[in-house]
Length: 398
Image (cartoon, rainbow, N blue to C red; front, side):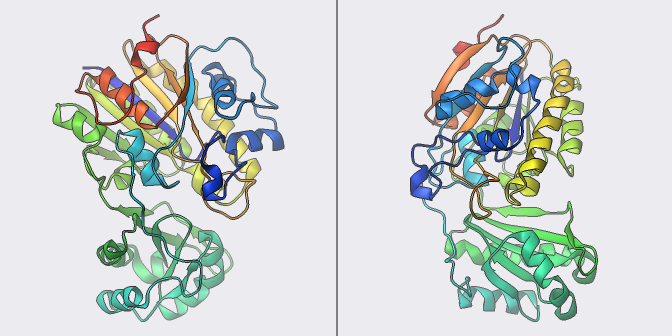
């Protein structure tokens, strides 16, 4: 059986979404606005066709990025069919399951959460109360309420424009396993509100110097139908989920789970898998730092540096690929660090396909992220998925 790798550059949007205005995101363009703010040195991503993908999406090549030579990868962009701009929707659609129903969202007024929900959580979890109960940036609310949380023992709860219920507690004073148990209770309770994820947001440190730890855990509802991952496992293939992939798919079809904290460590795990001997492999990696550390925090320079670091490591991964392998670089949504607020942005995403036998090709603007999953299904030799149009024939063999 063949091998395939999906490298999800979490939040690296290319702008151009036709329905961006409906989300308040008309004009958002994550990669372009980063490049406009700070020239990028990313020769390997450019070689694979990233600038061409951006031009397909938004109508213009990337500024301030040198093109060293001809494009060597198959390149294009994809628009999202799913009705949200959140992490599960983007990942599930990429795996062949668009989310065509509406998630449940919490209103912007304070208190944000229904009283019945918070009262039930307090009673069932045996906690003295809750702090926050609002829309907030995670780092801001921890800095603002961290001291009171430690003194009172009350967890900090908040949400965003995504369908999420987030709970932040101090790892030492509250306890990591206790936080996870509270989140498991919350997961049951928010099912009544059709909320996509409960997120455990542990933090460490002392007053004035709190930082979120790498022990985040997402409690997601499972995809509404079997994904590429399920189908490949059922066919006897091996799925490897690196980073938060397991949580995003609610551990459904996610096979071997490899955890790592930060893009550098995620790369090391991915390269280790690529260098392995196993055939019949589908490996998916979510490079979370782009979104969590730089997109949401509106850190333009940090995002730019992270893209360049990703680019520097990419040749090591390419060297580990062998004949017949297919790798695809993509994203799940945008998170424009120049945009207002701190939420995701509705954008098209890159589709860069490469490998030893993959020929350069223009993939155009795909009508769904599901085209990626359909292409991978064909490459891996399993039956077609319910959604998406394959571009496998365009990849050919050099």
